[in-house]
Image 1 (spheres, one colour):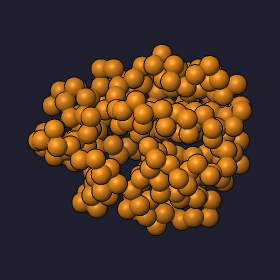
Image 2: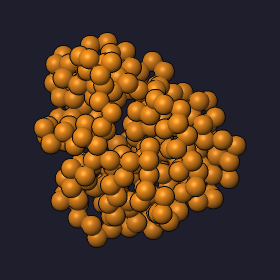
Image 3: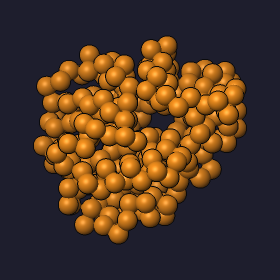
Image 4: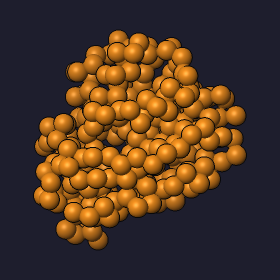
Amino acid sequence: MSEGDSCDITAKNSCCCSNPNPEKETTDLKAHWDKAYTNNPHEKLGWFETDLSPTFKLLNISKIAKNARIINIGAGSTVLIDELLKLNYTQLIATDISAVALDILEKRVGNEHVSFITDDLTNPTVLKDMDAVDMWIDRAVLHFFTEEKDQQTYFDLLRSKVSKGGFVLLAEFALDGAKKCSGLDVCRYDTAMLSKKLGKDFELQDSFEYTYTMPSGDLRPYIYTLFQKI
């Protein structure tokens, strides 16, 4: 499988997440992601990772306080929440379109220091009423929004919910990354593109390229960025 091909969900060379009928690609994203988490052990999903060092490199640069409000966008069943809890972060928010994924996560980590929000970032309802956050962490969600209107909705929400002085951590498929993931088209980014989308009120703090190794062994180039709202 080449770097430009679809990103598989479970096994190497299985092509199980590629869409054989791209012209009939599903638009029911909630059903799509619920099915992915229902039918596969979360540690076998193509985006599952245990090496969180790229994220924590940027988290450490931010020097975000332990009681800061941190939202993990598209959290799924990520182990990032586990690790943040181990480091004594006390105000975490996990949001995803898939209630199945969040249920897996909540059963594992509990809800003492974590709030769970099921919502659609392209048509947010609960998130629109959420209080401001000090850090917005998006690892591999934004790149699924290929329509300009959905990207606009996403960034409008982000800009309205990140507090002044707060941080935005975006990790998305790089320009030389896969063209599809889990059977869905993606929009690939570089630092300049993300900076333009965020606008003049966000200042770049750091960025770097990172190659993620999937559970299957395939490689996926990412761009990691950290911005601060000024």
